[in-house]
Amino acid sequence: MFRSLATAMSKRMAYLGPAGTYGEQAAKAFLARLPDKNVELVPCPNIRAVYDDSAEYRVLPLENTLQSAVIETVDALLSTLGQAKQANGSTRPRSAVADTALQISHQLVGLKGATLADITHVRSHEQALGQSASWLSEHLPNAKREPWSSTAAAVASIMEEGDKSGAAICSKSAYENDKNRLERLADGTQGDPTPKSDVTVSFYAVPESRLIQDVKGELVAAHSRPAPQGWRSETRTSRRAWPVWTLVEVRGDAPAPSDAVWLGTFKEDPSTYQRLL
Image (cartoon, rainbow, N blue to C red; front, side, top):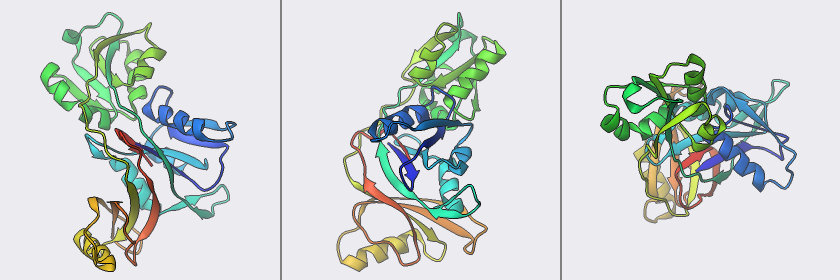
């Protein structure tokens, strides 16, 4: 599923580029839902650049059903805890305000005329490599796996180098953009995740003073009801007042702990395959 961070109607929307990434697909999906279509889509070279961009809307990959959390995004979210920098250096509050869902369908592509037997290394974003790990282990067990800044950037690098021993895992749109120069070596290298149901999701940053189980216990005790379903947490160090913050994802209605920083609440779309915050 995909989510954007925003504070008001935007004229710029930053996403993980270049053209052909799933981030671009998500950005276009958000744009289609805006009443004002006069919004510039701004490609960024990596996830941190998306988060730090001055655009009012930022489209970031948060997690997917195969590889769980996208650590680059978790790091970014916990680095500023809901504050966005403005052009004048000041900050403004921000939170997750929308989401959408994309079904991920990876293509393994190489240069025109290449075959699987030619491939010695495969590039892609680390999430796509992880999602395709089983397929790669079965069909290209000896190929080196090289993490890249994005799926589309991996394709661009293969074409730039002109080496038929290289391949990239990318979206169908990335392949279609340059299909005259590319050979599709495989379709659907990702797994087959089970769609999720439509539920409320909340995000909080919780300081080290509470373990995740303590947070869960407090939330349950506050309303004397069963624990919310689907708890997840990702922890990262910080140079702020607290040495460690935990990003807590809560599925189901629950109050925030007193020392938490709220990062957004809304409904998940059904058939979630990858989510962007």
